[in-house]
Length: 438
Image (cartoon, rainbow, N blue to C red):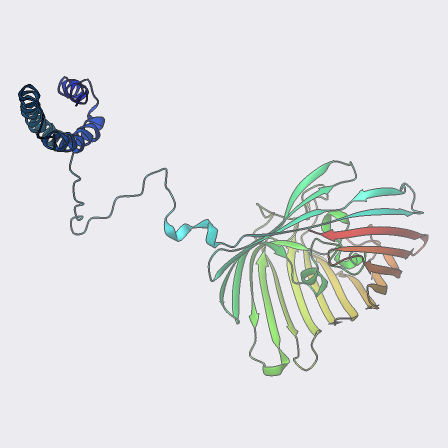
């Protein structure tokens, strides 16, 4: 019988004690040799009894060597075990002493787990082919707003929403606008408080339909509720604080909205229309609206609102601005009827003259399967000497169109608009639009 295992064991032991084996590898090697040596010892003790004396003598010598090897392995094991550092038990912090701050590479605690915010992103856009007889208005394909509507449940009470819009101007260059950015805290059904940039609760259309043509029946908004950068006459957007909720009214379903904000720019038409960072004066705009949603007629809503601000145009007296609005709308599954009227009043300080601009629109549509024909009539009449909107004048006329829902996410629309403009030439316009959501 041959015992060729001992020389490698002794060689490894020599390397261990000579420090040629890293400390982290000593323990595994020693344990392996320790577990192997008993097997060798057992093999030797089980030798046959009929072996000659010389072989027996050699076996006894090998046994002595193995016993010495076992003692060396045990000593090496004890040394390697003693070299392993023992973990230090955690010590309790002294009384009245704060716990240490988390390391910089782990700045968020469990309470800030972003996976719990339920971030949701919805997209809207459209492509339109349009043309008219208006001088300088060429027949063109137009890319609509690319609207990314983002909402998040920051917590059970805190909600966040934003509308980031990518839009091309008349110079064909794309720009980015944060149209809405609102953080809202809910105290319950009767009080919700939000801060940020929002759509003013003037009338109905402005808070029912935001930056998406797909959501609207028609290809565009009524002129009264057109966006500021497209010639609209209302402060569609505002930056400030808003509060809303229910009013105890039983089946009448009364709600309220109260807003305070920077209002709109009036110093120059070249300035940004929405005062996102700085207000041009210390006066704030205020708006209050109340509306009813009776339980007896689902889809019916009727309400009133009043808005007031102080404008400060350059090289002109300050102008008091008041907007009265009323609406009565019905939006059912297949039938829609929208009616809104408002009066925009400008009163320059230092004079008794007041400029009133009345306006209204009515819109009716009926669904037949995937088809929804509609008609809308709108009217606005601003004085030629109006101090803020001298280029509006008298505008009125009908729009007729057809919406076809190609799928749950794509709508095709065809619309004709006729706009009479007092003594100016009437405008005939035609638009074909594909609006979609994704």
